[in-house]
Each structure stands twice: as C-alpha cells, then as structure tokens.
Length: 476
Image (cartoon, rainbow, N blue to C red; front, side, top):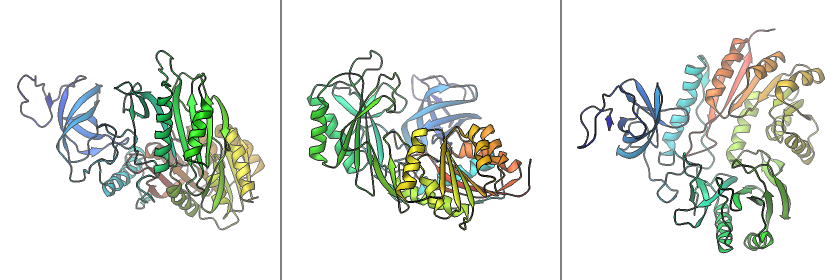
C-alpha cells in the first residue's frame, strides 16, 4: 500500500516511494484536502493528485486505485480511517452499497451547500479567470429529500439471481442494485417501482442481458406531477410479448390515476428514449404546475426534476433579467417553454429557440394553455437559428441561455454576441462550462455582475447557478 502520510505499511505489503505513480489495485492512505468538480475528494501523493470517490474534506481514508495517468489517479475509498465531523449516516439502503444517485448523502447538508458555493466561485476565478463579480449565497433546495419528480430505474439480475429493479452500481454498467426505498424518490414512486418489479418477477420475466441480447425488461420511468397529483408509469422493454395488459391493470388497481405507457426498443445502449411508445391507459401527457403556470409534458420531454426548487431557479432568472414589461427577450434552449413563459409575464415579447421539435410543439401548446400570446417559438439548432431569428426580431434587450452540461460552443457564443443584448442571463447546470463561456462574453465587452448557485440536487455534487452579464461597450 502506498502511504501518503509517510511511514511503513502492514506486514506483507510492499511500500513504494511516495512520489511514484500508483498502479491499478494499489491501496493508498490519503488525507483529503478538498473536493473537485464532479464531487470526488482530492488527496495527494507528494504533488501527484488522487481523486477519491466517497471521501470528504478533512478525512483520512484508505483508497483503492482504479486507474492512473501521468498527472493524476482515480480511486475509491474502501475505509474511512478518520471521518469528517460532517459525515452522517446514509439514509438510502442499497444493500450496503453507496447510493449511486446521491453520493453526497453521507455529508451533512449544510456542508454540502458550503462546498457547492466554493466550487462555483473556484470555477469562475480559476477556470474563467474572472473577478469583481458578486457571488451571492447559495439557494438551498426547497426539499432535501424525496424531491425528484422523475425517476429512471434499470432492470438487472441480483447476485441471488432474483430480478432487480434499481440503479447501476457506480462505475458498473453490468451490475444493478435492487432498491426498496430511494430517499430521493417519493413514496408513491417507490411503491410503483416495487409493484412492477414484483409483478414481473412473479411472471418469470427476465431483465435484458446486454451482452447476449436475451431477456425482455430494460427500464422503468416514473414521472409525477408534484402539484397536479398526476402519475405516469412507462415500462421500456426489448421486442417481445408478455401480459402487458395484466401489468397495466395491476398498476391501475393500486394507483387509479396512473397513466401507463409501454415503449419497445431495440437500442443497444441503455436508454429510455426512442422506440415505439403505446399508451395502454390514460394519456401520454403529464401536467405540472410551476410559477403559477400549467405545463403539458410529453413522455420524453425535458422538465426540471425538482419542481419546487425549479420555481426558485426560474424566479431568480426572472429577477436577474430585470424586466419592466417592454423588453424583447431571446430564450435560447427554451425546451417546452417553462422559463420562456415565466419571463413572458414580465416582458414585452419573448422568442424561444430549441433544436427538439417535439419540445417546441409542447412550448406552443403550453403558451396556449396559459393564454400567453407575447411569445414565439421555432425549432432549430441555436448555432444556425440565431441569425434568422435576429432578422425577424431585431436586437433583444435581454438574452437568456439555459444550455446542457457541455455549455455553449464558441460558435453559439459568437452568434449570441452578434445580437448585442444589453443583458445576458445564463442559467448553468455546470460551473466548469459556465466559467469559460462567461470569460468569452466578458472579453467581448460585458461585465459579470453577479452569480448565485441554486441547489437543485441535494446529496449530489451537481450545481445549478444563475449568472447575469451586462454590456459595458459596443462590439462588432
């Protein structure tokens, strides 16, 4: 075992010089100094960095090396020798395994918020080389437990050969840990999952083996309208026949208001999207209420998975936009129109763009549903759609962007800057991509005014934040 703290190791173990790069399988004793973007703890062997899953700042851990490269290694904690004072018992029970969906569960929630605040500031200052902005205090989640309105479960085979329905073990595509009670899911979601698993097991149905392509069951997607009380259950299978009407009846007997959908797909990868979807009971559309608006959500449409905290996020974005009622707003990556319609209540007009045409169709329907008529939507890739948009609706006063985790490409940033808005509101789900994008925008003549993190996903390292940039000088 390589020992970062100095000294020898137990009998029968070869001690390496501390500066030597560890090999896969080596056990290391490490003092964790901080957390990295992505959530792993950071330890060091002299100047060599080791990212350790399952370890928190201040802890001394024994870790197994998973892979090593020239400048850093990845490892996982296998024993906590000196726990942090912020470590708490994990509430989810996954057969002794760390919860794959909430790796920060063993960390006191107040400490999670502090670390997320620090990670946002670190990304902006270190990666973006930005300063002079106000980093406002993080907004805690409205609910720290049972907050998710959507859960995607995977079928697999447990170690005792029983049918499992739960989550892939961290770092393992071929192992699914069965779940009885996920503390991020509602009690209703847990009950539906357990009912479906038990019914399928009683029928002798098998999980799809992605190596042999044998078996039937792939995924179960459970979505809920937290405000409407609606429930949508979608089973994803390979091609094959089974008593799907019987399963639908069993679900509806326990949950009379549930919509039940069946998706069949031959996709090689584990994905719950695509394929042919059949509505066996109820409707394909789920409805939810957000910021006093009502939204129709199609089965594969994106909707923020934390309804209550999404209200706080969108309310913050609306406030940062500083709308007075007359402004023209561009909403890039508008999705089904959630933020777009929230902004429209205080703007003169709002124009939304999204590459997913089904999402744009939902957005148009949601505008009609809420009787909002100062919005326009059209489908297209933002890289190509901004210039045609600017021809129809000249320079916006405010531009709002809510991109995926990869952030904005350089081309999208250039197209955004061509529109020359006075104010840009950037809703980010990844501070490490927000930072370089903000740097590009600042270099073009804007000032990063303020940023505020929002904890949309308690017990995970994921961080949402809202930034506002204001134009200081004209640019070409």
